[in-house]
Length: 153
Image 1 (cartoon, helix red, strand yellow):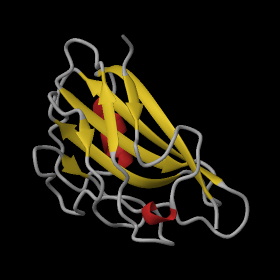
Image 2 (cartoon, rainbow, N blue to C red):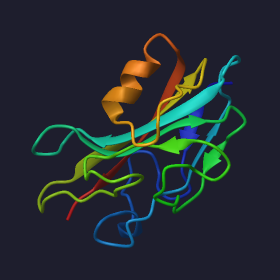
Image 3 (tube, rainbow, N blue to C red):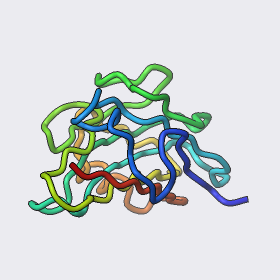
Image 4 (cartoon, one colour):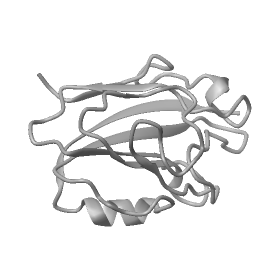
C-alpha cells in the first residue's frame, strides 16, 4: 500500500472550485491521506504555485501534524496552532494559514499540495516560512505525496 493524498474538494489535476480561492470564500480544501510509511512521527504540508509571475508563490505551510492525523478538514482556522495538533506557517501573502489561489487573469496556474511524512517533529515556531520548514525537514523525509489542482481567473 502506497502513501497517498486526496481531496473530496477537487480531483488531482482538476479544477479547484472557486470557494477555495480569493474569488470565493478563500477557505482551505479538505485533504486526506492514507498509508504513511512506518516510523512516521509527524507530517508537514506545503502548498504552492510554481506558475506565479514572481516565481513560486507559497499558499500554505503546515507542520508538526501528529502521526495519527489522517486529514485536514475544510476551512482550517487561520491561526498559529491547529486544533488537534500541528502549527501553521506564514504564506507569501504574509499571513498565517491558508491563502487560496489568486492568480492574475489569464492562463490557469497549477497549485501543488505536497505532504511529507517525517521521522520527527520539526519543533519550529508557528509562523515559520516554507524555507524554514524545508531546511528543518532535510534528512527527515520518509515519503512525499502530492495533489495538484488548477485555477484561473
